[in-house]
Length: 230
Image 1 (spheres, rainbow, N blue to C red):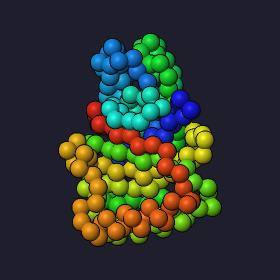
Image 2: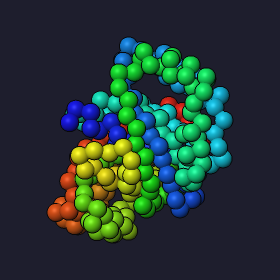
Image 3: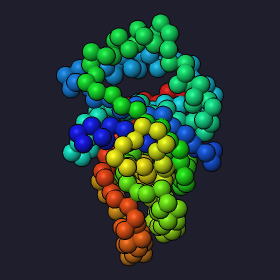
Image 4: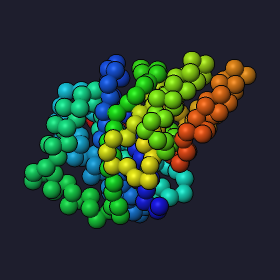
């Protein structure tokens, strides 16, 4: 169970006007005393990387997380096209890539990757630097019920930034397969997250009742953007 949450990343950095979104995420557990060196190496490599049209990558720290989540940083590659995202991933090879890996490898204790796609999203033009993920375990047959409950919630709840429901299609374990991901303009807004009035409280309560018997909540974690590349 110690490492299971490495794979649950859904940090979107995108052209959010598209209806379809695909991501490939890498979560790394970096030795604390080498954080600055690691971040400088990653920045140098991806600042000089040519990205296919529509593909972007956000490099973030993960400062807030629950027990069992040992990742400290995340690289999140996102695109409205699965083809261009695959093209980017395939391009990570050759001499320069191997040189980059040789530089970062001494600083990384563990690394995991996952991929997936968005089911539904809101406030698509408000993708902010602070992001929070809520991870769920649910049987596939109940995904439509969970999705419907989420859409009903969002008719009432006024989230301060982008918020979306997505599913993992690669790289998961122990049944975790759905994620709600939302962004905040700053850390203060993240700390103040929650229902702001009676209608939102009622909507949250109804959402909880609707998904309680069909899903299991696993964990939440929060990322802080370092830099975006495209």
